[in-house]
Length: 139
Picture 1: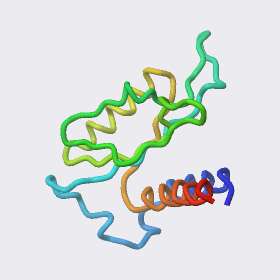
Picture 2: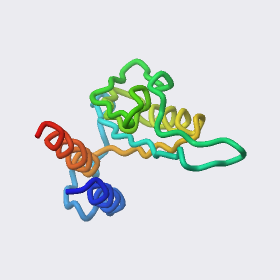
Picture 3: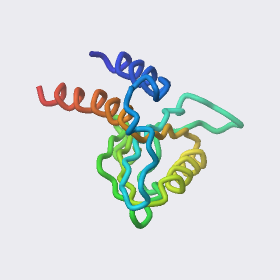
C-alpha cells in the first residue's frame, strides 16, 4: 500500500461519523483518572509562502509542549530532518484538552498545522500508517 493511499484512508476514517463505528463505549465520557492517547500529525507547509515567510516541514521537537502527566509514546521525523516531528503519539493522564490546545498553538507559531485526534479510529489510522511502513523499512 502506498503512502498516498494510507493518507487517503486516514482522511476517510478521520472524517467518518463516530456512529459508523458502532461502538457505544467509544462515545462514553472518559473518566478523569483514565489515560488517553493523542495522535498528532503535523502538516508539511514548507512549500507555502505567506507574508514573505515559508512554512515548515514539521514541528521542531524542542518546541513540543510537554507537561506533567504527558509522555511521548512514539515519534516520527521528517525525512532528512532528525529534529522536525511529522507525527507523534502521546499519552495524557489528565487535561487532554489543554494539551491539544498547547500542541496546536505551538504548531501554528512556527507555521505548520497540527491534526490531533484521539480514540480507536485514530489508533487504527496510526497502525495502518506506521506499522506498515516499519515492515517495509525492515524488508
